[in-house]
Image (cartoon, rainbow, N blue to C red):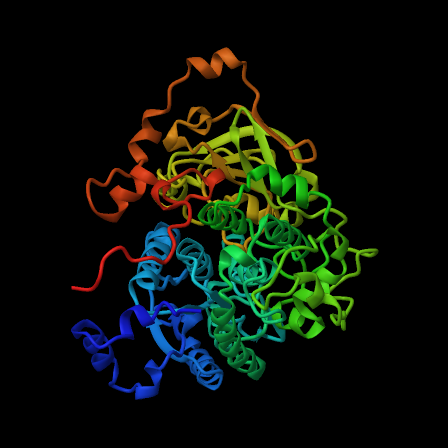
Length: 568
């Protein structure tokens, strides 16, 4: 086949001379003799702590590419660190995807290896790769090793939420809380719980976009570098076969991803990311698919926040392939991997080595664990909840609303509002438009007075997201959001909220004519951000709602790798 990169480097004219000459700083002459040029889209950054080690991963990828006859090229791309950027990393997922797509298209490359780890990096990389549709493969950076504090394992993220609530409830001193800080992050890698980073690594593999068996390999494990070397060889083979994301990822791949999401107890954030990736590929995927496909999939993986263990336990116990072997009958056998083989073929040799961490289908942690999609007069276009991380006693609940119009309002009043164990906390103004960026604030802190009495969960509802490491009876992604005219903006404190997860309902108990008469609260409308310029303005004007993946409307679909005009 004719390589895309030869359009830059082939020939004897002035432009091809310039392209080769400037790249000769390090590349030998034979780099331009028809070898495929492979970009390594690298999200390593000192300001993305979970991805710091990806330069070492890139080195192993480079060695594998050279060995297979390719030319590796490091391409630093926009990186989003969940723990540091303000106001929320999700505000820039689409910008990262757009910038990565444009750099892949603009440069003389034939394929790309996508290095991601922290929550938004793998989704952004996959969205970009789907839109530009060059041969591409993902290497997840892997989870950190488990840290311990006073003999107890620490779940990164999950235990931050738990310990901080213990301080507010008076069962842990602030001094002891701060003392645990140095033990929380033990090694390189992303969160060691089944948070969004671990979930998206597993989802990328279930979609067929990694070398099978890679997801979940700890960042500090030498086998990650071994897999990275092998992936370098694979991408050269993929270019030779012209195997692109559109050839690998099908409707069946998304079926497999939704089954995996349920079986591992994955993050609700995967819902918006999968919807956005499908939108880039032009594959029909809706919220209802998460109900229809995942509803009765058993929870097999006993990991925080839905269970007890952590990601290095999961890897030791057999990892994703061992878990999915148990639900093989639910997977689409036609879905492929980047290796060009059916995904289900990778399950043949998988085994469970610790049945406490990975359960069999006949003895699951929960018999039904899929993300539940709720609809009703509070969520006409849907909302989601993760039953595996919720309190069973609250999955059917009626209680009075306690309404907060913004994150700032919540923080100012949470410990002074009139609230009981039956109350339903409602937070609005935190959707894609309203914040803007849809932050991870849906797992609202509980009032201190209830924490002091031992209460550790309330029903909470918002148009925001929550960290995949968080837990509780938390309804998220309410669509349309309040800032887009959704009925969440009409709720008043004291209204009776009815949550019925088994029947997939979320309602405010008001007559339709009463809802129709109401106008959004002035306090709510005043809280919505309204920037007049820059990325935030563009984002607000074009962002889709959560039920459509919160992508920008003009970024959906595949645009391909063609460049319309020659270089300057």
